[in-house]
Image 1 (cartoon, rainbow, N blue to C red):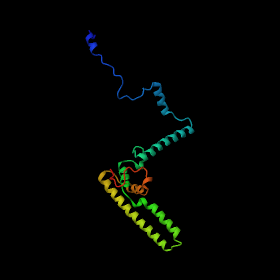
Image 2 (image 1 turned 180 degrees about the vertical axis):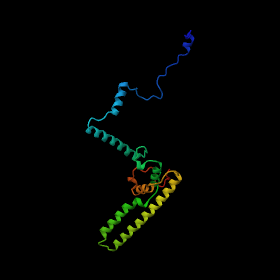
Image 3 (image 1 turned 90 degrees about the horizontal axis):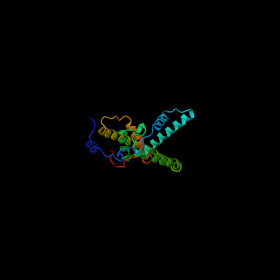
Image 4 (image 1 turned 45 degrees about the vertical axis):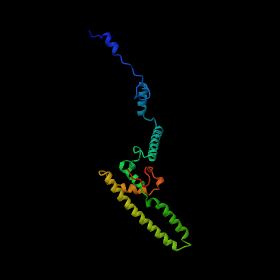
Length: 195
């Protein structure tokens, strides 16, 4: 009454697929292995020495991830101060332009060394060094103003609902570093439009 007829069973036997196309590429762990892995994740260290070793290893892996992110610009592992699309835009904005602030430290160092070394022989050089220091300070102030005003304007256009609090100082701090020593590494070339 509820049996299949012979003709149905012959025609409805599908062929078994040989392998799963979207498989995970490894065998499913046994129950014992899965439970051991789960218990190991929750296992508390037995003493302080073991706890500090685990903590050091965790900090070391986080630090290595952060260092790799600083080189590649991966937003997931960057420090909180560098995360987000607005900060990325600010970095690109700074890296795409030439700036007086970037070269201020080497120039001021050379000027001060020249003043210290040669001012006893040439008294008029002390006045020139002071004038150069004053000129560099004025150029840095003008560059600072132009950088922050331009960045705020660009961020206001590209990210109208985002806050620009602290963004100007972030950009100035990045600008004061020589380009090759900046972290996260520059992702745009000079003169290129920030995206």
